[in-house]
Length: 206
Image 1: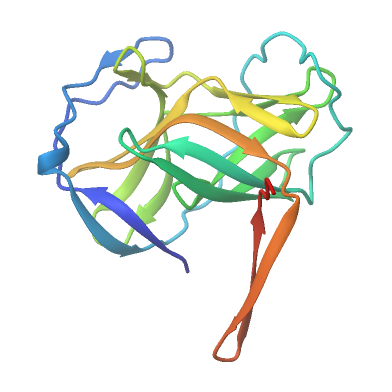
Image 2: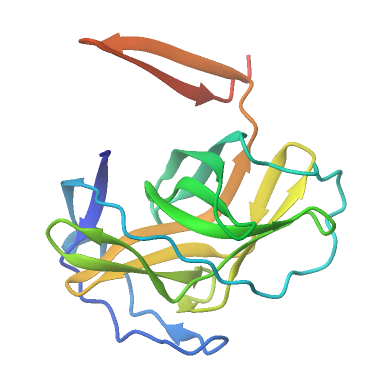
């Protein structure tokens, strides 16, 4: 179980379930959004293959299983950080643990093109209070979302994602991430909390 801050009780728009058919977001009113501590509950995994874009310009590894990444993104107002751990999954898929606002997502990795393909328009988890969480691809610049796949392109030690994440529940929007990049960490911070030893990846600039 993990703790995150979630955005709740903001009924923003009707949902689209058609791939490639972007639905326009209503104006995000930050004054109406309420932050609340939430306990995450993970749903069964999904595996969907989508068409990958052109080959990456950098060098892509044969596998990214076992790697950790530090993510940088915006919640529409401030810059935020997150963490991804890549694990192997069934049917040659991978699990990106913590990718979508702390929730796990299934994906496909193509070493030939250096791309990660994440299906959207699907339920990725069940929130303990608000029910099913459906993840969509967020086109923040045009204030739209769709069930197109989110594509991550690897160039050396960084992954750049073509879309953000828009996660909805019946009460409104729960996850909002735009401008997502993920980088291999160059440091770790470790500490103890009671009997638990914790370690977090870091990007150290100095």
